[in-house]
Length: 403
Image (cartoon, rainbow, N blue to C red; front, side):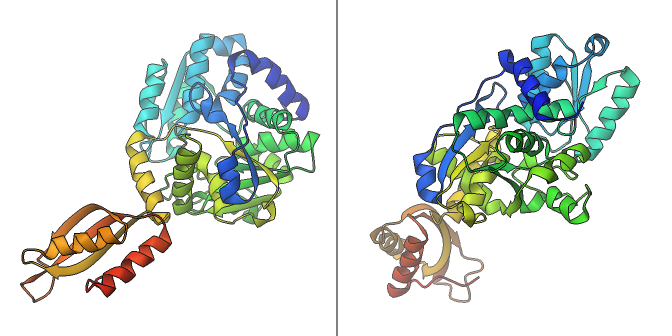
């Protein structure tokens, strides 16, 4: 099945009864901090928390009766598995999902709760895919690819049609890239109707498989690198998805893990929206200045998923606070006699900072047994406040110890 505007429109009619037409509201606070006129396409509000439901439902509805009876299987790091499990349950189709060892525990548990048989196998997606292929051949199951199946890509493209209706004056769409199925679908839909709209892909610096494919002029496998954007951790983009996406993507940018963490924090604080790393990548690109040509332009961010592991969320927030200059750590030498710590606390308080934690380091504080190193973690307003605090400490006789 070719992925054309007609197929994407047919997919939209096909899946309409089982999917949320997710909102795409303007964000005043995000517009203020980025300098663009920002709207957010909130597909994290789908039932299982991501855009993957679109393609999953479309692919399941296109199965032959015999394939439906046998059941389906997929390899997925999480969101495709969730979408497939949920809609297979609604449609009465048996589903097996194979997840790599590093899949978030919340996604494994949710898939099982939705009735899927979950097999955790392999250190990465490629290994999980190999196991899924083996089971598919052994049990006669239909394999549903998470990002390189034409039916999947057509389903994902329905997000692009909705964006054009909801934000008719859109000038650019920022879309995260993992396997490239989402951007291939959105790009095909949007460029077919509005070729003037820029389609900009965003990758993590740790998982730039699309950039590697552009350089090689074909999909290639990249090394595995840890990333908090697990939805982008695809080591090789899809062949079909790449062929489509390279024709409709105007630009691809890469963002660091620090900017992704900060974007998660910004969406949580300013939009009251919990997102995973992949969904924060488009905002990270705007905040990092990776797309300066979009200043003052009408931009839609594809907020594609909200399934971040709660155990990781706290650590991500802390990393975002550090990058934002709102959490700082320093070491100073203080007297180990009564009053030394009290005086340090008084200076920090007078500088307007809030102490979160103080640890004493006596073993490595030098030859003076009457002195101790105090390792301080403090809450501050911004980087300027951190610099002012350090100046105050030096002026009051507490110069930070260089490590």
